[in-house]
Amino acid sequence: MLSIYRKEIAAFFSSVTGYLVIGVFLVSVGLFMWVFSDTSVVDYNYATMDQLFSIAPLVFLFLIPAITMRSFAEENMKGTIELLFTKPLTATDIIMGKFFANVTLVVFALLPTLIYYFSVYRLGSPVGNLDSGAIFGSYIGLFFLGAAFVAIGMVASALTTNQIVAFILGAFMCFFFHWAFTYIARMPAFAANLDLFIQKLGINYHYTSISKGLIDSRDIVYFLSVITGFLFINHTILAKRS
Image (tube, rainbow, N blue to C red; front, side, top):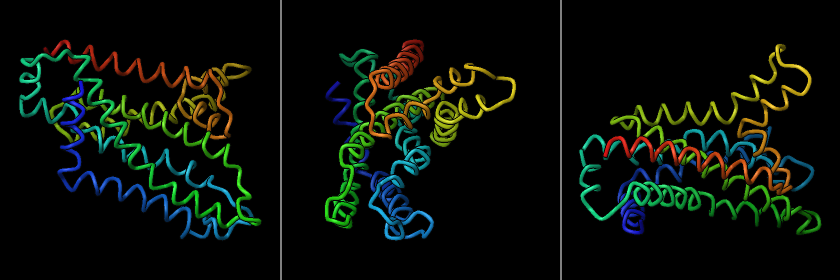
């Protein structure tokens, strides 16, 4: 598993794509936090990082499929997936190595945003007038959201040999599992407690809950279940190919 992990990390940072993807993420979030007047922290009357945690899922919708699209699609196209099976590696080793590598890249994209935290921290009046506990709780939610999107994106990549198709399919699947259940629950056909039940099936409900700074074990279990479920689907697809 470690050999796959190191291979994926090296491949990502040996091309301009890796730096471009992370750069686009930081610039996009930075524009919403500091430049656009409707969401700029500078134009707010209080120090907050709500902009980051509100816009990040939308940016992740494109960022993470761009990271995961080559995970298996490239291997399938070049035929190197068969080569991997000739080595002393199991399907689980391959999947988990690629999964942890992709999650590490998501963490690398998030780490520079801590600069925004320290900037907002200094802008508080008095300095430090910021709910740091809620912010770091929101970072945990953002991490789990990223990990879930990685697992979904890897399944999309495993279904095709074309990276562009993998990107589009991954973005669609991430959108569906994050937002679709929220919109479905708003349909008039679902009343009483049924609408709440449908919302809880989607990622958005649980991410919003954690983003409030409240770490609920039910939300953590949900994310772990989504991640495990999609990794299992990925394992099934890879096992059939082998």
